[in-house]
Length: 475
Image (tube, rainbow, N blue to C red; front, side, top):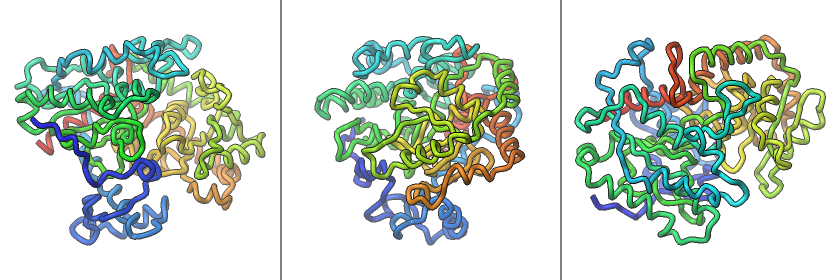
C-alpha cells in the first residue's frame, strides 16, 4: 500500500470549515446532483426543512445544505432494524476483530499526560479506562470524564465486546485502536513541523497496508475512533491538527468522531462522552426516575463563557438576556472556572427546564449531552450542533427533544430567547423531558467497561450495531 500524502482537492480551508461556508464547484465538491434521481424527488422537502434552519445566501450554500441532507439520509439507512434486544445480542455474522497494533499508536500516547495540555494535568482523566476519577457525591457511575476521552473508552469496550473474534477470517468488522485524537492533542500546543504532526497517522496506515484483511476490502470494513472533531484531522491553511482524514487511504474506512464533517458520508458523529457511565439496567432506571421526578427550579440555564473576541458569537447576547431575566434564567460563568467541577454543571442542568447550547470553538458541544442526560431540554441555535450530526443517536424529528432558535435572529436581536421559552407550556416541557429521559437517555451514555445491560442498548451498543449494518450493506 502506498500512503497518499496529498490531501483531497475539495477540502475546505480551516476558517471556511468552522463556519461551514462553501465555494467552488459544488456539484463535484459535495457529490450531489440536485436535479436528478432521488434528490429531485425530495428537493422541495429538503429545501423547506433546511430553510427552517439556515437561509442559503447563494446557490453554492444551497448545494452544501442539500448534500448534508443527502448524507444524513444515507447514514440513517444504516441504522440497525433489529428491534428485539435478544436478536441484537446474537453474534452470528457480527464478529469484531481488534488489531493488536504497537502501543506507540495508543497507550504510549497517554504517558505524556502531564505535558499534553499546558494548563492541566491530563493524567487524572485517563484513570478507570478513560472515564477519569470517580465523582462520589453524584453517586454510582459518575466520573470526571474529559470531552476527548472517547478513544480509550471505546477501546476498552471493544476489547470486551461479546462478539469479539480472534481470527481475521471470522470478522465482519475490524477495529483499529489508533488514538489519533491524542496524537493531535499532544502537538497542539507545541511548535513542531507538519511532518511531525502527521508521522504517526502515516505509520499506522503503512502498518495496516501489510495486512490482507485491510487489502481485501480496501479498508471499507474497518473503523477508526477519533475522539476529537473532524477538522482537527483535516489541516489546511491553519497550522493546527493533522492531515490524517485527508489521506487517500482513509477515504474508505468508517471514522467515528464527536463532530463529523458535514459532507463526508464516512464521518459518523457519535455522542460526546458524558460524566455518567452506568454499569447495570438498575443504574439507568434509577437515574431516569430521579430525572423524571426532579423539581426544576429554573426555567432556563446557561453554562458557558462569553466569546468577546468572536464577532459571530451570540454568547454575550444570551448572557445579557439571561441576566436581565434572572428570575427565569440562571447563568453559570465558565470563564471563572465554575464549570471545571462537573458537579456544578450537572446540578444546574438537573434544576433547569431548558439549557442554552450556543456553538463554541466548533458547532457541537459536550454540554448538549450533559443536558440531555440531566433531563434538561437543549436549546439549539445552529443545526450543525446536533441536527446535522448524530444520525444514529438522535431522531430526525428534533422537535421531540430540543427547541431550535436561529442564531442569526438572536445576534440581530429579533428574538428574546427567554421570552420565547416562557411561551412553552408545562405540558409541552413535560412531554419533551419524558421523551428525552425514557427514550433517548440510555442510548446517549457509554456504559462501564464491564457493563451488563439486559433491557437497554447504550451509545456503544447502538454504534456497533449500526456499524455492522453499514458493513453488511456496503461490503
